[in-house]
Length: 174
Image 1 (cartoon, rainbow, N blue to C red):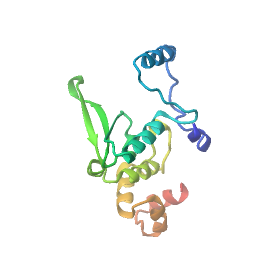
Image 2 (tube, helix red, strand yellow):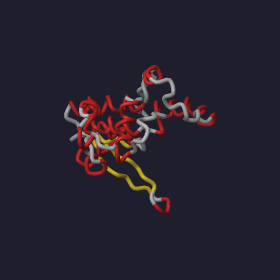
Image 3 (spheres, rainbow, N blue to C red):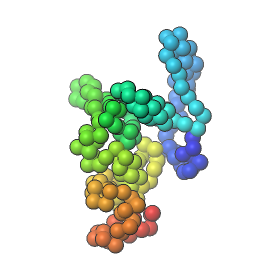
Image 4 (tube, helix red, strand yellow):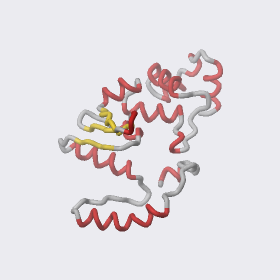
């Protein structure tokens, strides 16, 4: 994808799709087509990119949107008419679905959906092999984004950061 051109190690730790699943993809496409289900794809984009684009377009047309995904990265597009639904496996193997509108993202993570992007950039994302800033975990990243609002503003006020190791790590790993 275009992200691999920006960062060669993007998703570099992921295992490839199992051969058994890869073999089933053409059959799955045929079944979906027979069921009248639209398949959308574009070289260089991930499914989440297409989901996000279609959700935003539908919202602009006045539609209510529900996206179901196990990928928390989609929280960045939660909006007043875009509900992100994340299934979670609970005790006893039962699945519960957590629903997120913007206020739910703020309540759970302390940041807005757009700030969620910057939160992930600071703390990193092991699933996508994004390193983030060393010594900045979820708590520190959240407190920095809550206090300063954006990464750009963190760096505009870098001298105000009192914890020396965090300040140095931010400066070294900008």
